[in-house]
Image (cartoon, rainbow, N blue to C red; front, top):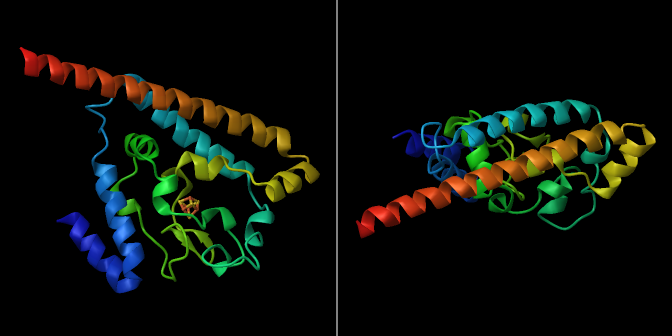
Amino acid sequence: VLIPAQYLVDRLRGPKSRADQVRELRRRLLAQADARRASPDERALASQLRRLREALAKAFRDVEACSGCARGYPLPHGRWQGGHCCGGRTEYVFTDEELGALRLSGTTPERFVPPRSDHAGCAFRGPTGCSLDVGDRPNICVRYVCRELHAELDTRGRLSEITDLESALRETFRRFVAARAERLENEMLRELAETLA
Ligand code: SF4
């Protein structure tokens, strides 16, 4: 009942293309393993990922490159002045692995609230940036540093702080993906054994 009600709200507030994408994302989030099904490693790594996303977002405080990088680009990227890297397709950043990590670290379908604006790129991109709390964003969104941002961080002397956190986030996500794949394989083997028994 929850997802159709949220869909209705999204449809009343914005374009159908966005509402459709967010509905699909909520459905895919709920299809991911919950805490009972996931392994202890997956649960611990997912929590660690959320903490790292929050720390990295703090380290990116008051950067300026992200607010003007899309100026002059064709649609959808150039719809607003900033957020060029958010101009791609929603499903490209919300992979099953990312959704798996989000679900285990507390993201719920209700937290996927899109902005009230045109739909230009990712469903959560709006005129003032991303509408999601940083803990509810995919890891790739938080750790991605384009050339322009890299240059700004370098000038401000903050590159090494960011690089350390970015590496930790990348490595932790790699370990999460491996733990998830291992659990999925075990589940598949168990099912196969039950079928053959
Ligand atoms: S989730 Fe947010 S940060 Fe990630 S691509 Fe979409 S708008 Fe950008």
